[in-house]
Image 1 (spheres, rainbow, N blue to C red):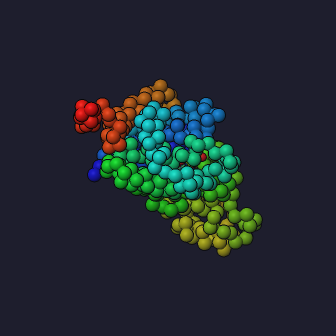
Image 2 (image 1 turned 120 degrees about the vertical axis):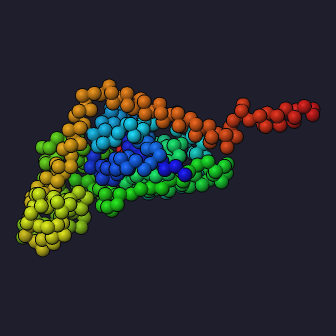
Image 3 (image 1 turned 90 degrees about the vertical axis):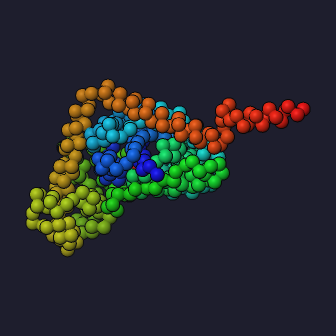
Length: 362
Ligand code: ATP
Ligand code: MG
């Protein structure tokens, strides 16, 4: 079996640290390992329309932003096919068939969708496209025969839904779809990086992000005003590290090397945490430390982005070529799918012969 990776992001804003640790950093490592037969990254603009139908400019404008972020992080268009979802009409076609393999109540049980509906105050006016976007995600994955999906944990229900569709389809028609498996970050805190405000998830929709393209002063300002332990008022007070986003970010980003470089009075994160918990360690000090680490991580990304920003036309060209390449693969797979569903009337000589025979007896 081939090992094919597919992931993507919605063009609803620039990419942030959550995307980076949850998926993007891993994609670059996988790409550079040279171990995979094919790697696809989808800019999911059609999916973004499901909750932005009245604000299409936002989606349109962010396609290039997401592409710039990919390139800035080291996604190499010679190794990875970056494509734009709306340019692959076969994805709509396949979604339409899959819609019949899933019940409404199954869609309503999806925990990520439930959370997102609440967040968007959709209540009783949920756009049908929004409720069904996990089905379109199943089309994204299966149309490219992808079996490895590097994602944050909010995507687990989508991948489970995809596997269910694959099993139903393969049982009903023929065994042509591949069951995908998620690839979560090794470090558990990276599966769902919290927001600067301490909310469970850093998310474009929640406006609680450090963007990969933020300027150094902006990053510093955001980090220095981060939520910490609300009961840690004075330096002497004992502080809590659990659920404290500053420590969660340190868990995600800091190494012992960082201590040597920026905070040599501690050897490692355990020592820093122990001091915070005993009391006598101020928030400003740990925030400064975190700022140094994040600045170091984001500087090369920001600088590479600025280089690509000088060549916007070339970046659109990369997306156009990637979309053409993806479409080639998509149309081959779509044909296979339609064949096993019997939607191939004009090529199926047996069917034509049978019908001819049926009517020749009259
Ligand atoms: P939106 O609010 O528009 O849904 P988002 O910030 O949730 O945006 P997506 O484009 O939906 O971003 O997610 C793209 C990928 O990034 C998914 O694989 C998702 O799991 C991952 N991801 C997003 N936010 C985080 C986070 N805070 N921590 C870890 N992974 C994340
Ligand atoms: Mg999302």
